[in-house]
Image (cartoon, rainbow, N blue to C red):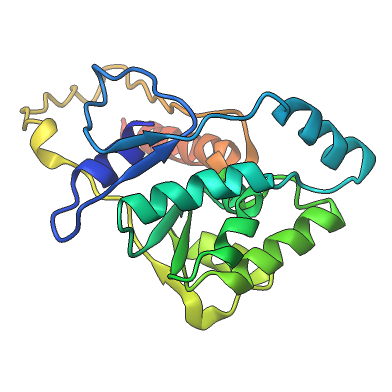
Length: 214
C-alpha cells in the first residue's frame, strides 16, 4: 500500500528493515532492505485448523517463528513494528518470544476484523497487552482500541502525513452563481465513510444555494 510505503521510505532517524511474505511491484515501491519470510506449504491447512476447527485466529507456526527470529537477529533489529492490528494477532507468538520491544499500528478497518468472535477479541486483547506501544491514526480509532481492552497509556495518535510536494498548487476557477455545482465523494460503501453525512451535507448546501439565488 502506498501510504505504508511512504511511512517506511520517509523515515530519517532510524534504518528500517522490511519483512514480508512476498515482494510485489518492486518498480513502484523500490526498497533495498527487504527480507522474505514466505508462507509455509501447510499454511492453508493451518488456517483451516485454527478457524474452522478451533474457531480461533490462526497464529504463526514454530517454523515461521524461528524464521522471523532469525531475520530479526541477523539484521540486529532493535524494535519490531507491526503494521495492521489483525497481523499482530497472527504474530502473537513472535511478540511474546522476542525479547525486544514491539509496537503495532492500527489504520482503520483492522480494528473491526472478526471482533464479533469472542476468541479473536480475546487474542486481540492479549496482543495489546503484549506490545509496548499502540499507534492509531485518529481519535475514533483510539476510542475503538480502548474498547478492545487496550491500556490508554499505551496509545499514541500518529497522523498519516501528506506529501504536499506531490500535489502542486493550482489556481481554482469558481463557477458563477447561476452555474451548476457538482459534488463528488470517493470511498467504499461502508458505514465509516460517512455517506449519509455527505448526502445530508449536499442537501443542506443545495438548499442554502437555492435560497441565496433570487
